[in-house]
Length: 138
Image (cartoon, rainbow, N blue to C red):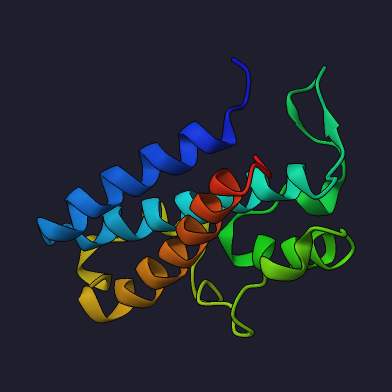
């Protein structure tokens, strides 16, 4: 299947929000990270990220990261693009303590306090996606 980072961003965000409201912290947390990752990758494409269409993935190894690593990588593309000036992220990566492997963790390790910063980070990306859509960047 072909990658669609925008659709994946929206889908993961919507499901994460539903799970958050239902206090299903573990899965909400995982999906907030996925939503942020997909949204940032969509913006990175707009800012010139090389994409291997044959393999259906980012071309560069360092662009194949998840939410915890892609935050800084996004900055490299944004800051180097003439349209990137108004698409900055907060200085601190809210996903520093997030890892894709946490999908295997027991749900008792998750609570609202742990998930809230990840929700905020995903929402920050969501705002940038909406801005990019309104301005015709994506």
